[in-house]
Image 1: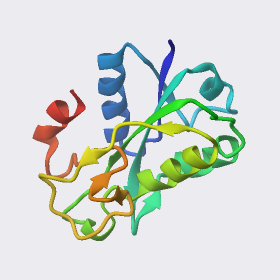
Image 2: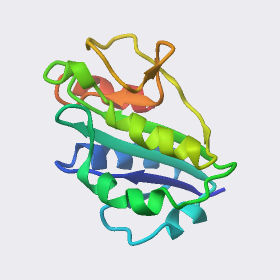
Image 3: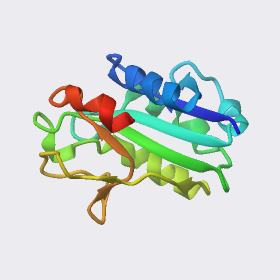
Length: 154
């Protein structure tokens, strides 16, 4: 079974998180900013998709550019997990909301979502990535809780 960790990273935090996730799962990492199509997505049995959130809940730039490929991919029956990075103190009104963009598209394309994450231990006002009291994937905050990232990833 081939596992692929796909990420978009502006300042390197999401890339570092992706590498740590991949190391735990013996997975390959893919920077969506470097991909020119959806072949890598289709070649993986399990997808782990990671993004940071920018400004007022916006998706990271590399993911924005990759969406045209992502929206065309047939993810029917593929297992998909998510992780998002955000700043719960500086941008608590949209903490890790970018993760919801790729979550919604993946489900629309037929993916089976895995790995809801409890919102316990975070201080934020709102997040589009919370459904029924849980994040749609792993929430990381390298700005305010970097000391918790490794244990959360494990």
